[in-house]
Each structure stands twice: as C-alpha cells, then as structure tokens.
Length: 146
Image (cartoon, rainbow, N blue to C red; front, side, top):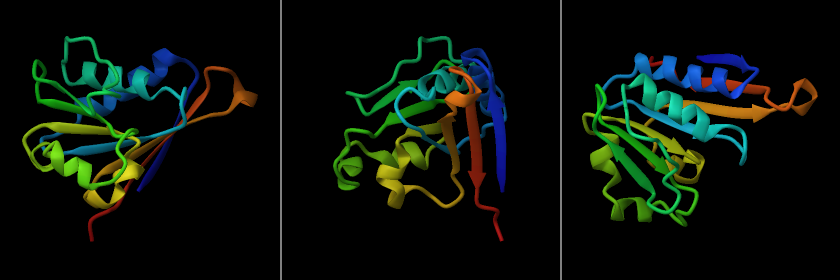
C-alpha cells in the first residue's frame, strides 16, 4: 500500500504527523526517510503531539533514542544517522523498543533496514523547490499482509 500526501507548509507537515500518530498502536514502527532539511523533525513533532506528548520533541542525533512517556503510548524516537552497523543497535537494546508496548519512529531507518520488521510503515519526505520552498511530498508505504 502506498499513499502520497502533499504539504505546502511546515504546519501542514506537522499536522500530517499528528494525524498519523492519532491512529498509532502499541508495537508499531514508523521509518522516516528524507534528506537533511526535508522536515523529518517537524513531522516528528507533530507525531509526538498526536500521541499526546507534552514534552519538547528534539532530534536524538547524539543519544540515538529519546524516550517520551507522557502520552497515550510510550514514544521512542530514534535517529540512527550515526550508527555505523546494525550490531550497534543491539548495544542500545533496540528489540525492547521495537517489540514493546510503545510506538517507535526511526529516522534514517534504511541504515538499519535489516532490523526493521516487514509490517513497519515507511515514510519518505522529499522537497520539490519548483513547487515552492516549503513544499513536501510525503510518501507512506507499508507492506500488505498476505
């Protein structure tokens, strides 16, 4: 299954994240892809808001994972940009996050693709400057269970 959304502003990008999170359920994993500056953090802030997170959402670039527990579900926000191999994910106990009762959002997930379950939702954010500085094409892709 593939869905394509178009966003014309950071506010719309954040709103799309919020709407997606409102339907999220325990154990769900969202993989977020996109070049630097495409709005991954903006999308993630909206996602956190959709889970009812009140804390300020920041990118966990140096921590690898930020945990938020004040929403309707625990939220685990990964940024694996600095991971050099999938084995490093074992060191942080990724399985407890991925297969627990919370929701995971993994930025740069293609770097650890071998660890991502097939039912994960992949989200790609892309710019198109011809359509405007704030334009984003947001593609959601998920394998349909057979």
